Image (cartoon, rainbow, N blue to C red; front, side, top):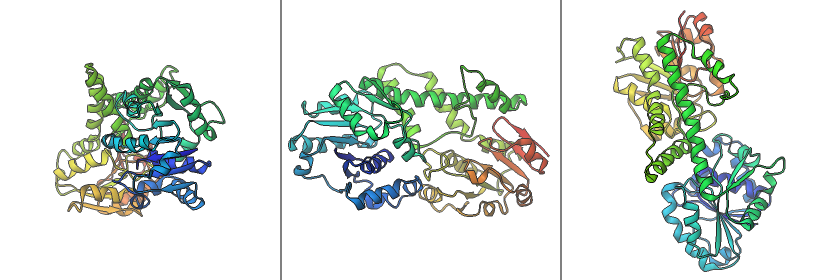
Length: 430
């Protein structure tokens, strides 16, 4: 098929790579805010397995062409599918493209809305074509750090579609990725849009509830890991998203929650539960700071701490809404010097906070960040952090304090190495 992909989001980049890989002729129009020359240099794209390499391969063999301006009418005339993956803030610019598509004539188009827009936006997109296009919702379900895998070997696609012919065309477009088992779950368009938001709302609710239980466990002197295992063993609950931590972030997850809150507000049905979920998450981003404050009885000025991890999750270079940003602000407000290590996200941190006088950064040896520090804060659970040299850490950390924001360490083992351990709902002392 001949496909036009518009956008510079991860969803657009992945669709361009994957669809051109399986033989579709893809014309990719990145958003002007992030053209291809910029995109191919960004850390988050280089960190996504296979993605950059596949883009280069498709460009070389001619199944993918990147354009930096609106395509001419001759090219638009031959299109069969338009794939939209832009940010919510960019949707107001789409009528320019739509008017050119409508003027070009040609085949009836299928417009695939792969963006996170307000509920009902897919129907509004279709209305702008005066009956010359059918719009379907195919919500973005990609996982950062695993974008190629989740697109090419999907567990599911939510297909919001009210037209049988449009469904058939989408199935043909995605046939190469739907061979092992049926992955499409068809429903009306508005239902699919709300389902995407509701999924992330539920996941966030589970995380926030578990973080609240971890806080209670801290107060009662209970090891939250036993509580988590007991809850997860109940078949009605399961283990997924029951790991307490120091808050979640990420561009898509956070944006979806805010979009869900907007939907609730616009409908006149205010959600106290969703407000609590968002508040709990922001509160948890300061939990390691509060543990540090408690350990030193509020005497923090002039101290130095090491932080391992800045990215909002392992496998990505992004720090959108990441807990480390809240943590840095809290530490600097108390005059604490920070030595920060992350294997991928240092550039993003410096872009966000600039050259701060209380910040030193490292992207190679994580132990360098611990030199001269009184404590270590684990914020992002990169695999390289899971099994540190404990004797080396005990020698480097002046106060021998480890604050584990992801509960990846065994408290008793850390304590036997001569270190004080403080996790989320877990603790142990030498």
